[in-house]
Image (cartoon, rainbow, N blue to C red; front, top):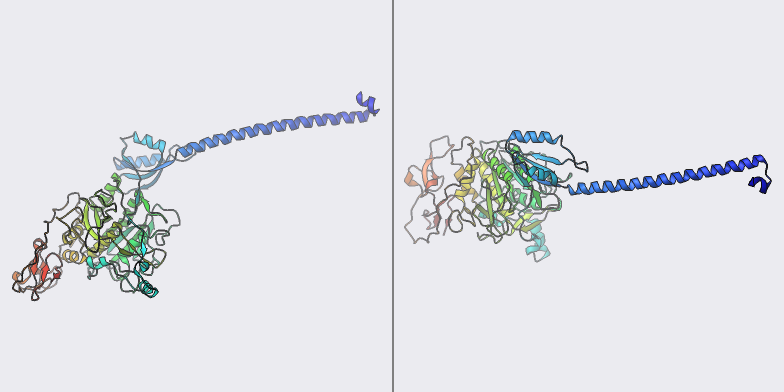
Length: 566
């Protein structure tokens, strides 16, 4: 009506306007509805985002903790592992438990569990014998940073260049008798007859003073608990493992680097090296589960042959699973375990060194005095050089000076491997006892809290071990009961000049008992095809007492290896 009145339009035009207005109205209604739907959707999205954020926050609260879990028996452990495959998940969709490693021949697992699951597990004492934190164990590094040896003493560019090119011999090489020839048993398998295994941060194989290379059959390695892509043979950002490896196997006589205690390289001895990388690049700690897994791998690599494992780590906490596994490796698998005593300079027990199954190594200086940082306690077993020690640097060809019981430990482990290589049919307990018996006595009483049985003497230990009757590999002896301590050795006063007494020394031919010097007996040497007699060491009679040598007025200290002084 309005359109007809105002515009005097035809009926068709009026209908057109009416239709157009209706279309516009419906369009506006549709747009309004669409806006309402969009707003509703946005509200739901915001609500969903809030829900997801809450779930994520809940999932973050359910963070994983690393634990070591022990079971009462093997069957219970297997049943638990089977059930974990069907376990419920967290709000974030993650499993409540993750099994990282099942230790062999030990009812224990290395796991990651949520805090809520951990609380539930603690309530089930019938199933679990213990639940312990999978702690981080620091390397037993020295108390101060290392210093490049070139800058430590060089005064001119020419002197610095000479030191860079010349080979350096640590003062501890002579002190421990590492420079005395120790030949392997010629009747034993010459390729990998004995294994030395360094559990640490890896070994920089490209160093010019490391004579081993991948694929040569004498060295191999593996990583444990580190990020993917970190290689055992090329550590980055940490040199600790290369310090350890260099002390053990740096090549001697090549006019570069340092001299290791196993210095002749592959092919010249029956000792093979295994490297277990448990410290991540740029870090200085390792999980205890990684240490244990690596130690089991070292034993597997030896395949029943003698193996010495070096563990240059120290922490004040003891775990039940660690104690059980190291005891099993020692008792049942014949492994010789050597570890750093710790660098706190206190009487506190540190681990793994303070386990009964492990040789705890203290550090001494060049004057055979305990290094001020070295631990002193009842578990100290042997001493070795650990102050101002020249070491190889990873990622370069430099030499640096460092300190710590972590450097004393590879002196003992490397030399123990050399000693064992001379009589590989002997057991780990045989080698351990001989190392104790032949150590150079330091301090008051034997053993004592500062030096244990004393400073390791490799040649003396080897000479005694080869005379022992070890035709077959005997079962190892549990170290839980310490051997009877040797009598305390008190320094004897310098004797007054006495008439010269002529007597025969070690391995000299003899015909009767009185021919040999005190501390020796006339007997057939084990392994000789003839009946010739020589002066052999009388272990029972050797009490480190002075005796007279022949002809020159010198006094020979008794004990293994002799050694005359004016």
